[in-house]
Amino acid sequence: MQTNSLESARSLRNLYLVRTVFPLLWAAAVISAARTQPSFASVLLIVYPLWDVACTLYDLSASRPTGSARTSQVINALLGTATAVGIAVTVFSKEATSIAIFGAWA
Image (cartoon, helix red, strand yellow):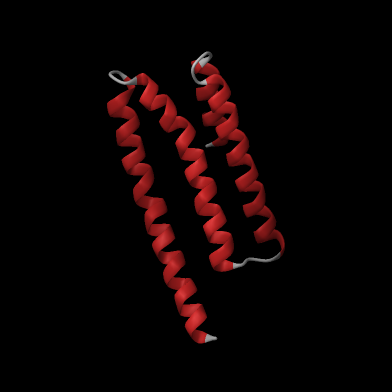
């Protein structure tokens, strides 16, 4: 039982490290691509909430929370998915709307 707890703790530590580093790399990529490759920057706006959903699902499986902690993570995953869909629908036709969706989610 203790081995599972240690492995879970390691997995979560690694997840939180990645969840700290990835946004920095993502922001640098968006900033550098915004002027020269706006389509790529637009795709990155869709990728970020989906990446957050993937991390949340991994967190759910690794930590196996119960009660309100589980509920809040499930809601977070649903909102992230809805955000990605909203951005995908608007990013190439109504850029300001997609940025507002992203901002409201963030």
